Length: 145
Image: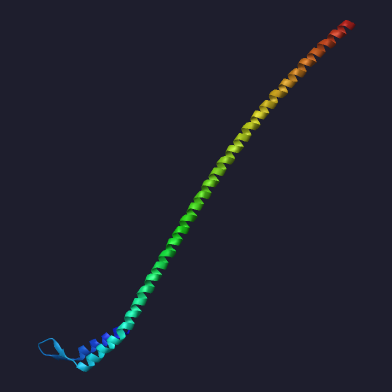
């Protein structure tokens, strides 16, 4: 900022001025000091405008950075929620798959047992019929003798 260099010039003029003994005061060139003050007045509005613009830009950048940070956080939270949901869905799918397999195995056992029982009943009936037929055959052979 130009105003700072003007203030430094003013300080140099004061430091180089002739001091008044025992008073802590100094003598300065009135025209030179007034000229520096005039220059300060001219430059001050530009520097204030520039400082205001810098401050506003800083604020805009901070707001944009905050928005971007919030968006990143929101995206991360959504991704985490999605991963959790996927994990839950996968877990439930495995549970359902295990239940389906278990039910299928149970049904297969019941069918096997039912099939064995049915086959045993059919064979028992065939055995009875064969025994009756065998008795008739024996009885017929006895009669023939």
